[in-house]
Length: 136
Image (tube, rainbow, N blue to C red; front, side):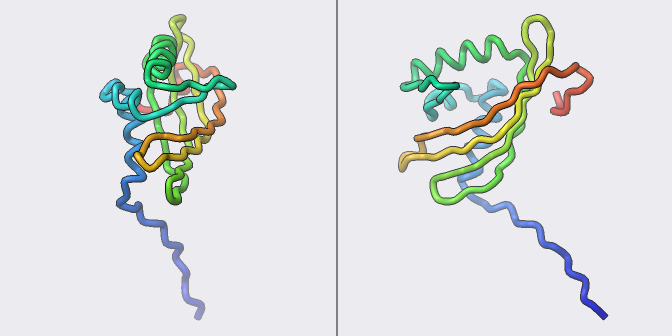
């Protein structure tokens, strides 16, 4: 009789590598936005943002445009100072049109824990309010 093989699911490591995921989620929910400003250098399209003042201005414009934002990030993998995540977030504009933005991000951190590099592929799709998946 053949032995049944049950695949093992990986254990969630107890690692500080998971902290950046929670920082992003909580920051976007308004719980710790100042921590997000202080920790990351962001690149948007072909534009590189350097320094906290540029990051704050960029995020202020983004957050003024993307209303009732709900974010979900999932760790894909990590190794050393690099993390890969998948994400989706839902938001609406000032006309009430809902959107789902989703994709992948690669993060690389320096020895102080600050983001050195971020590579992201983000897709935006209009959705109806009834098609929202992330709990309010």
